[in-house]
Amino acid sequence: MLVTIKELKRNLNIEFDYLSDDILLQNFILTSEAITESYLNYSLSGYTSSGETATPIQIKQAIIMLASHFYINRNIVAFTSVSKMPYTYDFILNSIKEFTII
Image: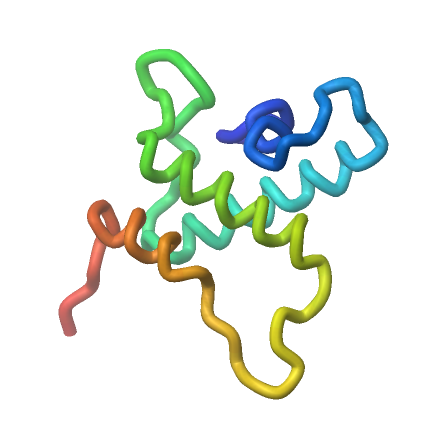
């Protein structure tokens, strides 16, 4: 995982010693990483959570924001209309996204 449960808990203001939702938080992180990888059109497998190959801060922040969104909104956001990812997610990642020109 490129984002730790502790980092996500910090963003959500969840006490670090509250462990009941850790599996849920981990699933949201993994899902957010997969969605981010798909959105950027390249693999994030070369990045790590720290060190020389640390994940770029834009990617890390986007994953944290999306995982937080999933945690807070655990059900469908809109029942009658299609809902898009939060604008901020797009804004952060578009600066490093690999676009394909057809």
